[in-house]
Amino acid sequence: MSISWNTAQNILCVRLDSIGDVLMTAPAMRALKASSNSPRRITLMTSQAGATIAPLIPEIDDVIVYDAPWLKATAPRPNSQPEFQMIEQLRSGQFDAAVVFTVYSQNPLPSAFLCYMADIPLRLAHCHENSYQLLTDWIKDPEPEQMIRHEVQRQLDLVSSVGFSLEDDRMKLQIPAEAVDRVRHLLAAQGVDLQQPWVVIHPGATAPSRRYPPELFAIAARRLVQEFGLQVILTGTTPERELVQFIQTEMQANSVSLVDRLNLSEMAALLSIAPLLISNNTGPAHLAAAVGTPVVDLYALTNLQHTPWRVPNRVLYHEVPCRLCYKSVCPEEHHHCLRLVDPNDVVKAAIELLSEVDISPAIDTGSLIPC
Image 1 (cartoon, rainbow, N blue to C red):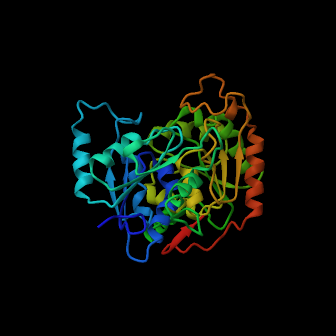
Image 2: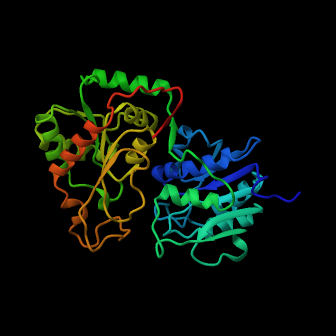
Image 3: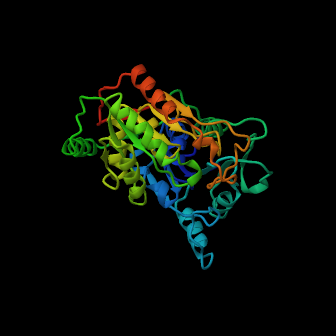
């Protein structure tokens, strides 16, 4: 029987990047899932990092972990055996269709080739060049020459090209109630009064080019505590412990560190009850957007398509001629797109957002939490 996009029931979604990228692809996966009268199965193929968020995305039925050799974060391969094994794993999955999701600076053809070799009948992706037989549905990529879309919109447009659409395009997560309970108990043990104003600050990011200077974070945090009476909660992973300790020392005011004390579910739970997140443009900014928490986003101009989606926000940056560098380390060495953001503007943005939104929403942890 011939397979069409309308009749495809077993769909592979390829998104080989990290947590934030998978989150921003979730609405497109929901469009694929929802646009069928019969049960449609969605399998996500992603990196080890991307797989960590999958349990919180209700549209995903199964996950295949694959760290592709054409991505810079992947450890060197001694040989190509993992690729042949992945082709066989994909073939055994008997997928009707595959959608390869990429940012516009990535080439989808290596992933498309795996899907072609695995005999997946339908294969869809944006691509700058003619893919010939590797894609059955080639969408000529208009970015960045003609436009730059938000990453969520880019992926929604891709699946829309083969007939899948969505009225509610917000990101959504399903957070276990027990994760929220654990976070509440942890905050109480640290002396945080949830009935009083508080904010979460996440000062880290994987790429140095996306990090707001820690001494400026400290100035902003000090003002929030001393002048506005806010409780400041700092988050991060083990490599960010010294960063957070530096900020706590420099701010010379009370704060709470939850560095390395939260798993991903608990981080999402923390953000779901937080009045506000102040963060670099990194995974927690997208987690906050997915649970409806306002974000002050310190946004390095390495690219432009990853701002907080469908949530109250302030995007702060300093305009620079070297924007769109796509670099993990500032090639100009001055880091002006973030370093020249005044910490007083961070404070102003935070206070404005807190005054504009209801900072005590009821959280139903047993249901989907939209942004």
